[in-house]
Amino acid sequence: MDMPNENRPLKIGTRGSALALAQAHETRDRLMAAHGLGASDIEIVVIKTTGDRVLDRPLNEIGGKGLFTREIEDAMLSGAIDIAVHSCKDMPTLQPAGLVLDCFLPREDVRDAFVSAEFDSIAALPQGAVVGSSSLRRRAQLAHRRPDLQLVEFRGNVQTRLRKLDEGVAVATFLAMAGLNRLGMSHIARSAISPDDMLPAVAQGAITVERRADDEVAAHLLSALHDDATGIRITAERAFLARLDGSCQTPIAGLAEIDGDSLRLRGEILRPDGSEVISGERQGTVQDAAALGTDLANELLSRAGSGFFV
Image (cartoon, rainbow, N blue to C red; front, side, top):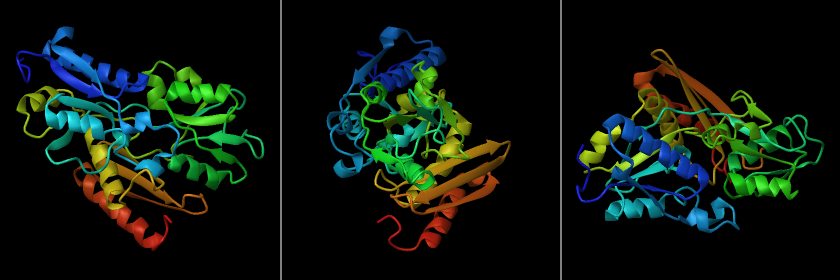
């Protein structure tokens, strides 16, 4: 298989965290298996993003979604890299002109993981316990369920958050089961939380590979990796998010599931303080994935009224 430039390997851009690198290596391994490539044919390029550099402030204070992707996308547009591997839940709903998302790897476990050295579940936490999370969604969901708890900011990669637990900054936190599975650290989770109890972030557990729209070689290489079922589910969830104008500043959750030709989409929006949750669902065919997402978002917006997210 010809590379985008025969004089150099295919260059995959990624963040430098252990999880981001695991996802980039999974993509590389899938490309090698699908196209008979060798390790020397593919190079992984680590790019530091704003979200990685600024760790002392909440994401919503420094710009929300895009903080983990902008520098990587700039490198792709400049030709410094050929494709980029992302956690899909980090991706804004609109891509920069000239870039597309049309490759989704098979989705991992969508559930949130409850992580604590002392307690087995949210219900087991004592009155007033301190819980750390950087996710506005998780914080709002937790505040709605357990308004007695104290919530503190908890940014950083998996290893950083675990260290903060060890240091006593909080007695519990949440991570994505998908990330723990990919890192071989599923044992860290005291329990996995059912989506019926804590609806996950839109696209949680999904890896997406971004490319330049005019790069036909990359399009061919990635087409062999794309998982149709994951793509359909993410289409519904991201349509839901796009209509809600979702960012890291708005607590939004959504999950699409497929059974044969049928698709079920659940979604919810929350006041940041957890004082109110508005939820709903849609069912239809997989062909209507995007329309179901938009329609559910319109319903929730009409029920919320103006100022819901303030």
